Length: 586
Image 1 (spheres, helix red, strand yellow):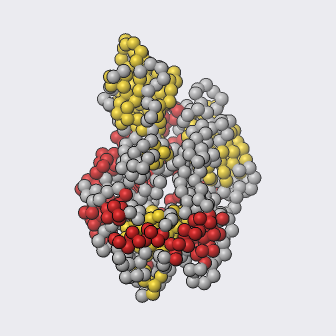
Image 2 (tube, helix red, strand yellow):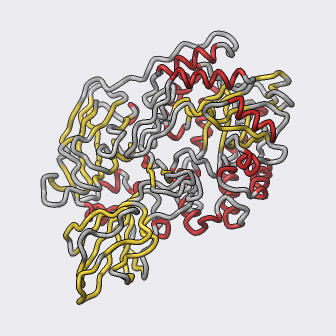
Image 3 (tube, helix red, strand yellow):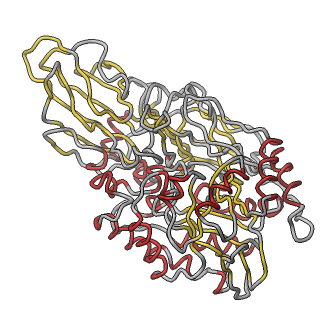
């Protein structure tokens, strides 16, 4: 990808230096794959018959606090890897991305105060978007095809027609992309329904459609809105994602291959979503709401983003990979590359005792934010907590007789102690303790976020106690709140945690630590026999949430580059019961 080329949207085709070209793309989110494994995964996409890769960019991963940005050059490094692999690239920078990602990629500090004003023309939303894009987009602009790089197209927002109809916002965003130096074609993507295409399209910008089957009908709908221009399915859903407590989603390989063939027979370009899903490392998995209107009960997404994709979470080819390869070979320019060898796996299973433990209160004392006093309980957003949990401490005044005690506006899951005695688990659907509570009493409510909604009208809803603590019909006021963020778990910080023997007194919750001796490091599967629910880190790298009893995911994927020869330090933050006696890698 060293030659300077011109890529344009023609009346019927995409044109590269005047020559018609079909994009055979696959979604691979670089932030869901360990950086040392990008090259292998890109090689898998090329071997399947793809000539292009598509990726989102998650804003909240890079800007955890206003103005404090992380390693945005990571996107540039990925695009450089794409060029080395001989592929083109399509970039979807948002600011909203959905992607089954926490808050749809929007920062919690922005959605907290703005709520429904996000993704609109509201100046308080546009200002931080502009600041962020001017920080991020130089990574894309420098790597556009007309500058010798791999980037062919950039998306305006994402599936906006599924959410809103603020055309002025979309037009402003397209203008901002141009002001920031994006010179390659812009596009939008929406479901193939009239209201979605009407709400999400921008005049003069290529419109594409997202679907998993019925290509001819979908493209016919698209043509009613855009009579000319190349056809493209920007998200060909070849599988699906999983929620905790549901069955694992699977799509038959032959059925998916037939649907892919139909897309290509229409003369269209395609982006396979997902070609390789990867993992929701770091607790970044989002959540959805049930029901056709996406306003029902919370459905948190699992840590694995395998998606039943043709390249599985471990980077291995599946039956779907080989079926797709057969379909795509007919559209390739020359023979397809050989399928790369899979990365090395852990040489032998290992097991280590979770020998050390610190109570959850001790962990909060060492790693938590400052404890603050409030009249009414603050939300996670008001406490500056994105991923993690919050302890709310109330005093029920007295004397008073026992009354029902519950939480209004609970998001998402709480464990409650009354005068130091465990009193029950509360959820949004079942938010009243089973036994009444008399006063005076001290109540501790530990609330955990299971992931912010990433799609639909409940996007931007806050986390924590968003209503109040209700005793009989009376709100209890006066609360001390303290947050514990997942990104507080660094090697230096955990070194301050006062660990003791794991078999000591307590309720089993807390931070466990073990050392696992590895000989022959490689990709591995991590299990916690007896573990209930929480998060796991290996050598400081957060693998994500475990919740085996809920299923369908029972083990976590450990990328080989995370492990090292010899001693490996494992932390287990157990939030519900006991983490069990050991950690197993296999």
